[in-house]
Image 1 (tube, rainbow, N blue to C red):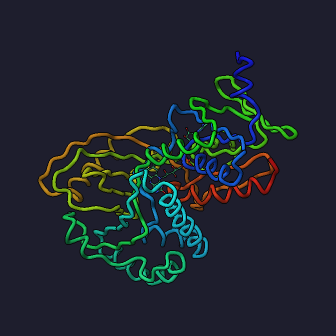
Image 2 (tube, rainbow, N blue to C red):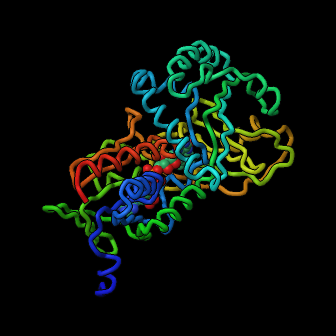
Image 3 (tube, rainbow, N blue to C red):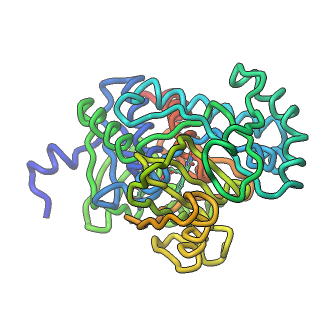
Length: 378
Ligand SMILES: Cc1cc2nc3c(=O)[nH]c(=O)nc-3n(C[C@H](O)[C@H](O)[C@H](O)COP(=O)(O)OP(=O)(O)OC[C@H]3O[C@@H](n4cnc5c(N)ncnc54)[C@H](O)[C@@H]3O)c2cc1C
């Protein structure tokens, strides 16, 4: 039972309620407040911590590897692929500009590694095409470049070829979520955790949000930023969940490389975090099992990650301990494009980040904040 005091302060009518305290919801609240500081905003999240992908990823601020961007061109055409690449590029710059110094942001550059000569040669042939399209986005004529020195200097095994770019970076994802939350608290955005939204109703000018623990919240506008879990609120949305499994080793003496690395079309990715290898991927080993909303680890993926760690990444004959393992849940669709838009003056959505929400959420949220404020007066 809710008291008068609780209703007056916490369960009052807000201007905007955002469901989901991942990067999409947090950046949206941040840009709404930036545009209109007096807005009364409340964020609801079902987890005690944000519990989707934002604090569970590998901390790549991902520009994209050449094979991934070439695949995007095949799926969506050059113009759309470049549009979304530009949004990532801008997103990484926003992260750096607003929070870089607080979140271990490192503009370390990214590298795709190859152990298949044919795939490398095919990719290399298309680099000129990619670079000519990327020049207007990054200002760099040689955005992707063949990088022999990585192969020679990093001591990886089994990789013979590498293509690098300077636009990719790495972050501490937990620190970015925390920095956004601290900034929003200072801006008087209310955040309630442990509140799973069951459904909502829009009637006249009013949105009512019902939580599973029988609380009701009111607002003029609702934004759904629940990514992989959106079907529970919008059953017709076209998306499917995908799990990413990750582990981090204990510190390894003599780990002499820096940067973010991808191989096997981006299905595997690793980086150095304070002399530990953070390594994730392997969803493609069994899509049927990994296309799930359920957190968890499987022997198939974890064993493959460990095998590849020893075979490919760390110096031969070294034995390392895995310190922690975890998983995160992403949202995908066949078009590889996010949905971030107003449905009407009372309802908007920012979901389906297709595994790229670290980089995409800042720009998508900035644009959506403007659209929400254009669509209705507060
Ligand atoms: C292993 C892994 C690697 C990744 N690598 C990269 C990368 O290299 N580059 C990149 O850009 N991105 C990467 N990502 C993806 C990136 O982390 C996500 O795209 C991004 O975090 C999505 O943010 P979001 O806010 O949209 O969703 P989420 O972070 O999933 O947030 C959604 C929130 O909604 C809440 N929620 C859901 N349903 C409800 C409900 N009914 N009521 C209340 N709250 C609810 C959840 O608790 C959650 O906190 C990776 C993700 C993973 C897991």
